[in-house]
Amino acid sequence: MGIDYSKLRDPNAEYTMRDLSAETMNVTRERGDGRDVEITDVQTTMVDGNFPWTLVRVYTDAGIVGTGEAYWGAGAPELIERMAPFLRGENPLDIDRLTEHLVQKMSGEGSTGGVTVTAISGIEVALHDLAGKILEVPAYQLLGGKYRDEVRVYCDCHTEEEADPIACADEAERVVTELGYDALKFDLDVPSGHEKDRANRHLRAPEIEHKASIVEAVTERVASQADVAFDCHWSFSAESAKRLTKRLEEYDVWWLEDPVPPENHDVQREITKGTATPVAVGENVYRTHGQRQLLEEQAVDIIAPDMPKVGGMRETAKIADLADLYYVPVAMHNVASPVATMGSVHVGAAISNALAIEFHSYELEWWSDLVEEAVIEDGYIEVPEEPGLGVTLDLDAVEEHMVEGEELFDEA
Image 1 (cartoon, rainbow, N blue to C red):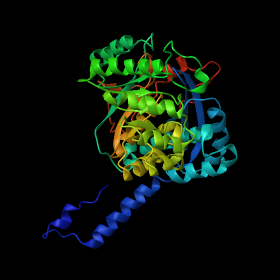
Image 2 (cartoon, rainbow, N blue to C red; image 1 turned 90 degrees about the vertical axis):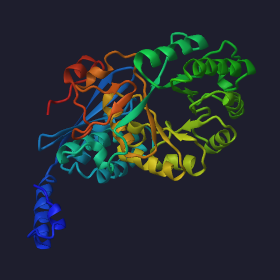
Image 3 (cartoon, rainbow, N blue to C red; image 1 turned 135 degrees about the vertical axis):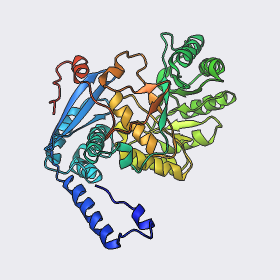
Image 4 (tube, helix red, strand yellow; image 1 turned 90 degrees about the horizontal axis):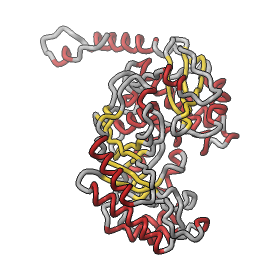
């Protein structure tokens, strides 16, 4: 049932505001019936991928099930099991309220960061899938609608000889030409053969030159076909990071990721402001409060939250809104299965400043088998129009690849 607003624009139509009010009440009443849904259970299953993915399902008395995913890591399934009693009997459409409810109830477990936040994130993603199915809208609509119909994916690449610049360049060319990606990332925290003491995080001059040679080889090989980022995994001291970022300024680096440890934002600010090389940070910072200082002090050029780790879909959208105040784009870190990957896609569709989403499993042949739908096509993901996340778990594939000792979800 819907309201024919065109009649209000027709001066000859016998249609009054009283009629409109009555129809509005009827529509509201019908939609209100959809709120009579209660959560009955929450279950998890861990899949043994290139990371141990924690899949989450939220069940209701209406027979509708929502599927989500928490960032990999030990302890998330146990925490989700402990949170299940706080959700049973609740209305799954109240996503924000339930998320904050879990943050408060789990405050003793450190719900401002770490695995507790990732566990809550997995539930929050499942609630978006569930609410979308109940309301019969795609998840991006719950976040305010979409800016784009497809979201760009950058492929995190690896070689058997990570430290060999030519091997990296060869792989870059293969991924671009054979797999269709126009955005890539390679690691720079790789052995160079010149290390004396890796514990002190100091980069000697030959080490910096080795890293520059990787950047040079890869960017020159695919310069006209792809953007290329490089990841340091928080490995270097402040002075080494300053020298490395300056050394890389002559190359077309999309961004340099996490050059220093994540705790000290003051140091991060100085690194970022001291170079023309774009710097990305954010994977190891939790919730909007954790990202706030990085953005307010303009300590990042690109913010890189991990959606199923940072707090979920709405939390990531809030981070993106904050980043947009400083004209900072968002490149979501992502090492997830197709479930959370698609959750990130809905966020990427709904925020104005989405740059790209990471894909970390291009070497895992069965990654796409976990869901019934196609996901990545030629380096992009089309935003689904189906209700919820728009992906359906293939339970046979999930069962085949479960972590040893895990139990499969209930069907419904």
